[in-house]
Length: 245
Picture (cartoon, rainbow, N blue to C red):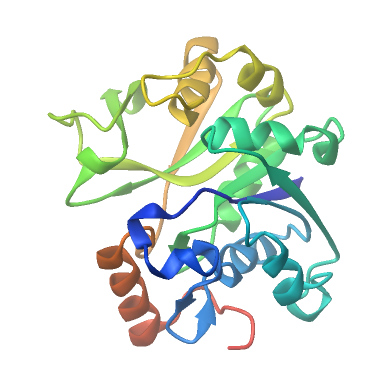
């Protein structure tokens, strides 16, 4: 299984900081944000990694990460996303990299306290489909939210005004190789983007979407409030032993 870190976008919610650099290169406590998803993959035994980025600061990733060897990455590639077409649009760029295999996809602004090894191992044993990582949060309306029927996901609703559960779909996903054809079949949402929630619901309708609950804290770092919260979490207890720790 290979790893894909989605680190594109314009980072408009973090302007003016993102006028001079990509959001995912901003510091979270004492390390660049991008280090944390790299470590999440490495801790799950995934050391073949693609970073998908975009915008005018994309070249800065090469300056920082180089070939990845200093962080423990065995093989590192880069892809460039033109425009801002959404998560599923960026994921399409990983098809050749995946080379017919499975992928673990992480949004570049997601930080976790512990690891995803158990979920990764469960997905490796799963015959087909996708696996999501969920986390109970105080503000699920900011995220994709699952509606449960017993212990199974019945539906995922994107940013619901009245969330059917307290769980959020985190920005960590496991997909089989069918994900690329699914992404190609999507139509843009009202935001003009290809939505990852539509991908997940496709697998749900197929009957092979599973999920695990993420241990420890989890946060994105895409707003000033969440960036500050992430730095506080790391300062208090680290984040899955980031490179250089």
